[in-house]
Image (spheres, rainbow over the protein chains, first blue to last red):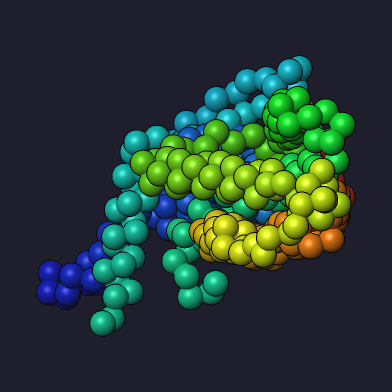
Length: 107
Length: 215
């Protein structure tokens, strides 16, 4: 760990990766939400193939980190929960993309 | 696909899920071109003006019903999504709408031209006719559908471009050479697209059962 100060830039990027975003299921969720204004749980389950329980738990973690906003509502008489990426979530994903590009860019 | 940027893949998958997964777009397209296929028949009964009115009414009804069925049947199964309108997506949308409108106008113009034999002009000598406009329409249709197929990664749209383009060309040629009043080649093309749409819709209903949140 003493060598940390002499780490080249890509390795420092790797160490600084946002672990909330880095988890594969959460990364997938954020990528889908990045492309839309908002989407409901049904869409996210179909798109990611996560179970309802997993989806709910990962979205709660993203909500705790301030990356996702969740709004409970109704479509007709049926309950419907919409999720949307916050500005902070969008920035976090952009940062993560840049960091991964630097890390994996071996050219 | 595997070498492609995963962000692009997710973007394309989202577009596919929202627009092309349920087959409703295919059914709408098939019905519109089927209406164009019977256009000369209904023109004989109604006259050109009322026929155009009828076609526009059919167009409006088909689009309205497609939206209604999507909201009532498709969205509760695949999920509700509010698309994000980025400047790039807006530009793509505007270009697509303009191209679809231009193509529909071109197809209508080619189909509205008077037939050679077997029409009210039967007694007149048939002048040799070039099909330059129709060839341009084929190319325009193939270009439009190929662009959509490439942008959204929906390969069946390549086939649709050729089907509709050649169906339209075949209809015009048969109308001028053999005096056909029913656009059979275009009807066959529209029929194939309708069949694809029905298969996709059936598959969609099987793969995405209606369920309540959390169940």
